[in-house]
Length: 381
Ligand SMILES: Cc1cc2nc3c(=O)[nH]c(=O)nc-3n(C[C@H](O)[C@H](O)[C@H](O)COP(=O)(O)O)c2cc1C
Image (cartoon, rainbow, N blue to C red; front, top):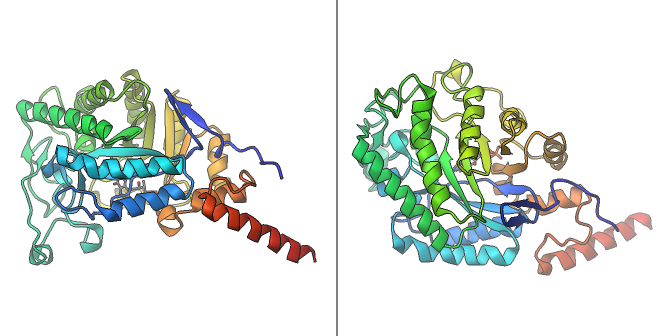
C-alpha cells in the first residue's frame, strides 16, 4: 500500500533540525518533581509520549529559579544538579525518533500555588497540612494575581538583571541536558505574560505601563538571551497567551506585533495559547470548541511568523486541515495525548500516511500490521 501524502506527517526542517512530522506534544506539567528534580515518572511519562510517534515532545514548564516554581512539584533547571536526570530523558527520547523540547518557565505572581487537583488557587490549610509552605514571589508590581493570592514583591532593575542571568544559565543547562528545542514560556499569567499584559503590568518605568513597547521589553530581552545561548542550528519557540480574554487586556493585534519582534530576535515558532489572567467570568475566553485557539495561530502565521496551533485538537483530519489551510505550521496536542499517547501514530493510520506502521516502535508495529491484515482478510471472507 502506498502512503497518502499529508502535511501533518511530512517532515519539517526548522533551522538545521528536521522533525519527522508536524505533531507536537505540548508542554504539560505533571507536578511530580522533588526540589525540581526529574525522576523515573518523567522518563516513563515523556518516553511514552515520544513512543507514540510525534515529531517533538515538550518537557513540562520547568522553573529557571526556585521561586519561579508554579507549584511544589514543578521540574526545575536552576541548578547543575538538575542536568543529569534530564539528560537521561533526552537520551531516551532520541532513540524514539522524536525531538525533545523544554519549556523554560517562571511563575511570577502565580508562583507558589496549588497543584490543579489540590484547588488550582493560592495555597491554603490543606496544602500546609501536606507539609507544603508558600515562598516569596515576584511580579512586575506588588499587585497580586487575584483576590486571596500572595502579594508579590515588585521587581527592581537589579532583580530583572538577576532574572536575565537565571534564564541564561537555564538555557545553558537545557543545552547540556541535550534538548533539541528551547521554548520560553510567555503565557498563562506567569512572569513574562504578566509583563506583556496591561492588566498586570502597571510599572512606571521603561519595562511597563501604557506603552506596549515597554511591556514587551523584558520578554523580548529574555528571547534575545535565549537565542544567544541556544545554538544557531536549533529552534527556539516562544509560547504566548494570544489574548487575555474577551475584549480585555492583551489582544490578538498585540500578539502579532510581539510575534514580529520575536522573529526579528531569532525566535522561530510562536506557540499560540490563550488566557491565564484571573478575570471575571464574562471576560474569560468561553468558547471551548475544537481548535478554538487556531485563529490566533493563523493570525501569527499570516503575518509571516511560523506558528503552532494548540487547544482541543483531537481529530486527525482537523489537524491536517489546519496545516493544509495555511493556518499554522505545527499542531500541538496535550490532553488528547494523556488520553492516548499513541495519538500521533494512530492519526497517521487514520489519514493513510503510515501504511507500514513505521511510526510505531518496531516491536509494536510488526504485530499491529499483521493484525490489521488478518482483520482485513476476515472482512473479505
Ligand atoms: C496536564 C496539563 C499540564 C499542562 N502544563 C502546561 C505547561 O507546563 N506549560 C504550558 O504552557 N501549558 C501547559 N498546559 C496547557 C497545554 O500545553 C495546552 O495548551 C492545553 O491543554 C490545550 O491543549 P489540549 O486541548 O490539547 O489539551 C497543560 C495542560 C495540561 C492538560
